[in-house]
Amino acid sequence: MASERKTPALQIGEGYRAARRTTSLLCAVAVGWSAAQFDFKSMELAVGSVDLSHASIPAVLFCAIAFATTRLVLEYAMQSVEVRRWRYAQADFKLSVFLVRASILVLAVSALDRSLDAVLYLILGTLCLLIGSRVASRLGMRIMAPLFIKLRLGQGRFSVASMVWEAYAWTIFIVAVMQLALIVAVAVASTQYGPLRALWIVPPSFLALGIFVVASISILLSSYYERMFYDKIFAAPVSFTDTFGPDGKVVSRVFHIPPPPVWDWRSEPATDDEPNNGVGDDNRG
Image (cartoon, rainbow, N blue to C red; front, side):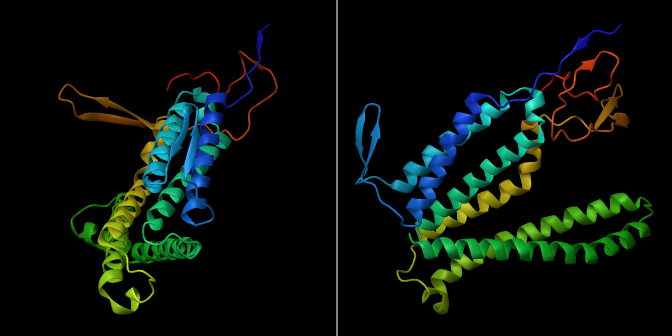
């Protein structure tokens, strides 16, 4: 008779919980301060009170959020593989990353205008950029896919799937370049174009605009490269295995069927002769 073994219940570690609480608190403070909801002149630490009356509050908050976010990532990376592949834990981590990105953007816009109106304009502009990018991506695929299929068929290539993926990659690249160009154009127009300058109570300085542009571009680029980061931090199973020849070239590639998403954990006992699709026994990071 096969011996029974119980699968341990999934549970996020206390270190990650503490790092998440700290990060969320700092992000809330950053958003509240940037929206001019409160001010603080000093900070109470374990070593005593720190005078912040002459300090750059955005710089202090940014450094604190960066440190807390680094701690959050490290704490999540030190969780077990089962927890890192747990979809609820992944959703919690993605929500924290979204909060950090939003807080950094709000801090950057506070250099232009520290007010609730500036935060609302930022939210509206971000929504318009996201909706416009989605529409541009769909329209781009409708144009690029037939174009690449016709072009590659003329070159003697017959794999439609590779043509569509190539068209998709070029569409994403063009949309990303358009987004970057739009951010820079709006920033330049805010200082050069009269109707846009009239919207500001105090015209923004080049330094403040530069900080906002750098923060916006950094967050935009991070959204395009987040897939690679998430695959690492979530310990995603490999989708294929390559076999290399003596010359270092790929001889064959075997694709694997990934295990189903782990949204919830099985609570019933698992026996040795029961398949578990590789979930629960794989301790490889």
